[in-house]
Image (cartoon, rainbow, N blue to C red; front, side, top):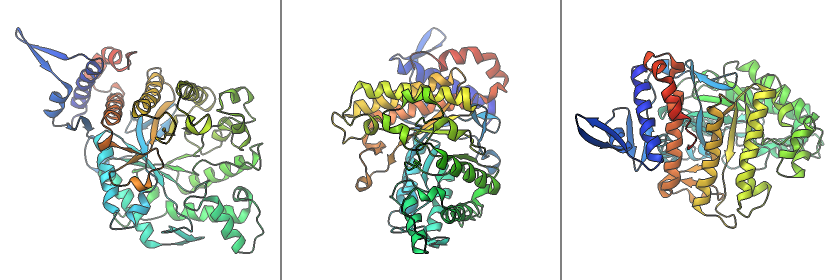
Length: 469
């Protein structure tokens, strides 16, 4: 699709979405006759947009590999093909395990189709399952080829739906093995390890982790024949899901591990971005910022948001948002206030001290929380989206967010309370879709290369960044 035409269409779509969101209609004139047009009318008659139960599907430009390039971090933005790439995405951690079973593999395709239908462009998922049921890594450097083929399928299927992947490489927690499994392997080999945190410090366990990183990055996809480290479908590598090292509150142990592993990943793959996987807690290096932590314990878990992200090889920052876990399980307005201040603090730090984008890579609310209702969930999601758009309009570092978590229908038995099933959540689906449309319009401005966009830049910005987003 021609670049200028795409800018033009996306701009028109935004005007209509904007007015509809304000509860008004979009009107045009033909001679003296007034014609009313809704967003759905326009999208249904556009060859580049479709609607499904009120959800908008924004197509990517082109279908060939020339249009599917690596996303990179440039200053406070992500960019691809010279254009900004702001992220609206989601988490679904279990994709590889589902793909390993032919009876559940179809759920992976179903999920990507549904995510694509509401404009989601990035998915975060696990590229690990260590020593557990249906393990990818059965023992150090010993892999189940069928499970690796399942991960191949996830990557290839994501590309079909134009969804990029953040692949996490190990877990801090026991689920799917985690650092505890590495310690068990170490002890089975004759080591005398007494703490799971020795995962970060013991040279043998560090070597186990590096071997796993090497195996994943050098994997040749059996569906696409593309080596993972060369595949633009992979948005970034995540060193670990929610690393903590409570045995060393100074943060030195974890900092050493991050510095070594980020550099190691880059030595194997200089093309892809690397992120740590942190929750975002402030530590000893920034005492003035610890006021933003959700509780006093957060300062003692061995992480240090600013210092950790200053390690060479780290390309963007990650932050999680769980007021219901960190502050109190009972829903309250204080959770929304915390979410906004937590985000703003990290966006500011990413701009002032780190010079990099920040993704809020997990956020959500559990339906198990006292006082939960779907309206509150929508309000929380809206708070996250609005805070990000406020950063966008200032050219800030707020680069995107990933919902925790998106499920297809029929997978309720995997639900931890946070799952969003789009087919059962129409108001949430529409909220996600609206934000995707806004993000797509910003991303489509083509760095204002097309002449139509340049002439209309000021008008479009007025609508894109209206205060009533």
